[in-house]
Image: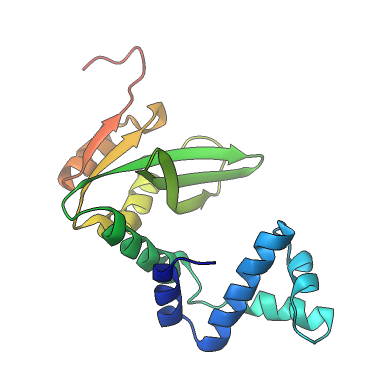
Length: 184
């Protein structure tokens, strides 16, 4: 169900009960194909009341060590070690998207003609991101790629001189699309 390097990292980061609950929840998500607390609580195969199952899932999801940096980043590091030789160029894509009133700033890794999300920030506004928000996201993600040569790819939203200078200071290559009327 999960690749071995996922299992190794998850067992290391979670207690036995949390690890088993996570595996059950992943299995449930794959079978019911719905991301809803009530649907998960209904399908959770534990012989307790519905409300107790719902609260159990809520408590699990609110654990302070269940977060991107503690759980997902070690998995990404293991995945990089498996699929990317050290010092290889790794393409990182920065993008922002709106889903209704949800505004996400995301960084992904390009691998095998796919973009795999590594990190995102929910922006508390609609519209484009600014340099401070972009820098915040990169400061969390770039340490994962210390043993690689990251190249940042971005569309016209990310063509700021501040971002280009900051990426240069970080020794990160970049290819940022510029607006049609820009002169270099």
